[in-house]
Image (tube, rainbow, N blue to C red; front, side, top):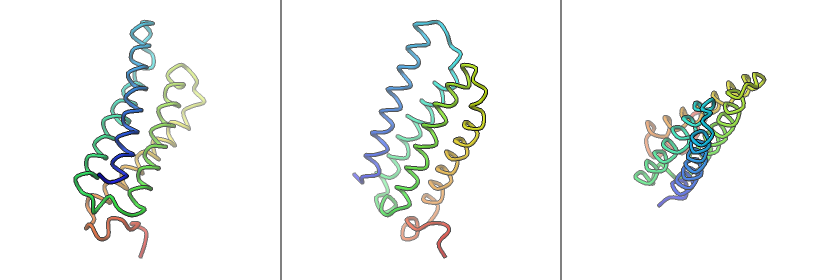
Length: 132
């Protein structure tokens, strides 16, 4: 299995652990104010990261090179920062709005990079879409 697949799967499991822990915390306390953060951690963190890992495992030619690693870093940083900022925003810290917005855009950039990798031919998928 390509290294990028392992990274995505391991990261996905970490997001799952955090998402489940947050869900348990909400259940135990009866306070569900941060349910949006819980949903984002589980869907974007656990599910989507695992799907990225599965795609790269099934397409090892597209898992090679720098672009898949750049996509991993951009996406994981985006989801991590967005989830934390959203958590604090939902607790009432409105100063987090710009951080949620910026990290959401970073997460979206990671998805755009993944789309590039999926749609580009295998030989060019590992090159930057900005390279001439």
